[in-house]
Image (cartoon, one colour):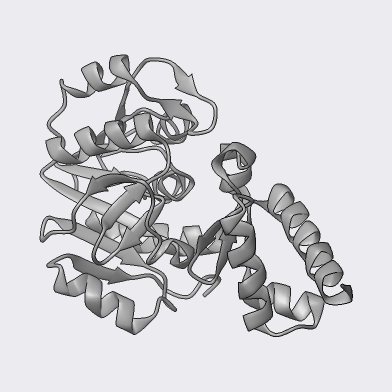
Length: 259
């Protein structure tokens, strides 16, 4: 009985942390609770089975309904900035680029060097606002109803607007990146929009924090292929990177966050 109570108390505390920050790491929790990482992983598995969190590589995420975009933007800011610094090497003068919704994609736009001339289309108001800081970027917004969780326009109107575009590059967001399942997502309408955006572009760029690696979600965005560039964190496991590369995708490695 005591063991069950302690486990329940830990899980209540973990859920509170998920509501506060949107994300937890097994190693951090093990140190905080002074238990083994195996114990924490069992807690997270039990919580995921009960529908209380989403298990990902190295930890867990809050469920979509509990993790608004404003929270996601503040999570792992340094890691996202490191990914952005690597990802912008794919941007070339004169490109037309579609930038999908996502906190890492927002970091990429914020990292674009001044003077780079682009036409940038996006369905996310926060990304459009960031792009407008650059005098040499022409900004096109995709319209429609703004989904509060996604932080962007999705649905029929957004997809109709998208039909006018043939971008050189689509900077795509994804909730999961797996060598077998490819890119997957959690919100059906958002995934439908992402799928259409990726299909219309000459090439696709995905910048992915390590907690999304080997995560597989209910809705398929795209299979991995040689038209994709995947930007991974410096400490992303080599074994996973090798399997991703075997899909034909090009792999970029970010520098260590804060370096």
